[in-house]
Image (cartoon, rainbow, N blue to C red):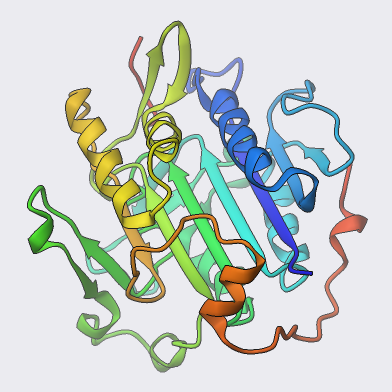
Length: 304
């Protein structure tokens, strides 16, 4: 049996000058989408800055506060306990000076936990080195980053060069062009099957928007709406960008991946995963604690 987990993070930064409106709704929207597909065969780890159980109280849901410690602990605890991973973040994203020379624009991208003022940000370097690169190559990971400056979040090797003319769409090998990357990065091609959709380019912002009196992140709202009509990843990506243009939002959904993406289903079930990997399922030996040990404990710009 292939095991699936969804890590859904929605942070409104309640009571601060950075407060957002739609992030909890984004978490609930992604929960509903995945729950409709998987039912009780998926584990949900929900991190939201509220005491309310915003996605219900089913036995396959655990709630946590979205502190830096909790986010990092959960990412570490689920490594290779599952075959299929979903990660959704809705909140603030920022850029800061790159200190290890692995960014072409000289800036790291980061997400902000609820306690970022006291304990700092979580960088894309951290998420890549401590989560993505530690997963077995047979794992599948779907990521949605609904935050500002998220275009190349996770530092994956392939960037989808999209345009309104689909014939010009290609995947660019960004690692090949980054000659200054050290050997550890360049040799790490044995990555899991990762697709990451971001709310905007690195230099852009993502919007908190209102539809029919309900607030949402623009990317999450567009994604869920487009997913109802089309389940293929490249088609969803094109549809999301078309809808963002139709709504006149000055942001461009970006796609990064660990491989050159074919137009397959965004959600893959057991049989589909076996076909992709074409090998028996394997797990790495690990000493990390099991997931069960961590359970239960108007336009507004998503930018500081």
